[in-house]
Image 1: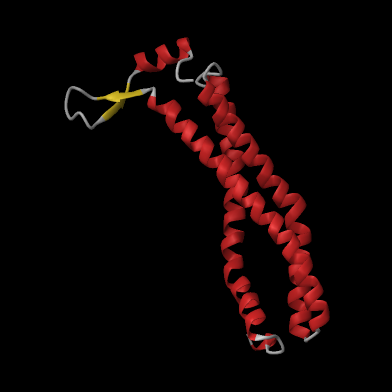
Image 2: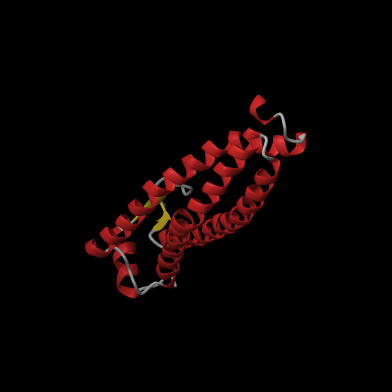
Length: 171
């Protein structure tokens, strides 16, 4: 951290905090790069196998939530992240070189892109929360208490699945 001695302590602290937290965001991005296509694949497989009931409102809410989250994620990854990271790298290089004027300019540019990324992270999280809630709602229709033993135990019944698939209930 001696590389940033020319900066004020508050600015240096923010820069160092970014260096520390950056790997967390990289892990989150890589996790989403893997999980997003897998989620879409599961939906495709549900459609192929006939277990995706398109007559249920909650299924549509789930699908729209996952679709929107995917669009927001890939939009951030493709449109926002490249210029944001370029300005971040330029900011760090200028700060390291002691060029405070360039560092200030690049930090301001980075901050604008970072604000957009924060907004997209929040919207992605919100749409995933809605999708997860709709998934739980949909799954709850296929589960009933196991009356044979402990009433707190739940089990999925074939009759419930077939009945819900035919009726489209749960919307």
